[in-house]
Image (cartoon, rainbow, N blue to C red):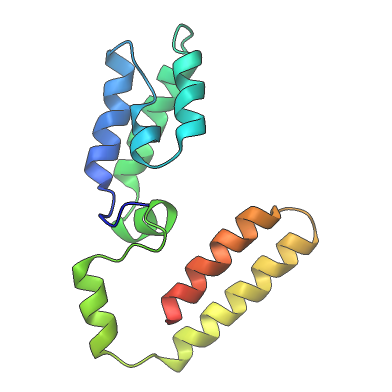
Length: 131
């Protein structure tokens, strides 16, 4: 995994360029989702990936940087956030909120609404917020 965080603007630019140029799905490769990148390339002769790229490009632009980082920069901290985390103590309220989120995520896993893989990814993300 690359240690450099992914840029929301670059991802949206690549997604929106997939609407115009014949090669679509480049944003999926950039975001570390090669399976979906290949699927976009295989279906590029249909309008499906172009429509999906347009929707995703707008979605990336509308997301806040924190939401984008939570979705696509797993385990990668920017230099600003790492310096803030080292200087600040862990807020007990934040730990409680994360514990509640973990319980809620576990209940979704037990109900079968979230796969084991998705559960483990989100669990690691939440625990990384504490550490």
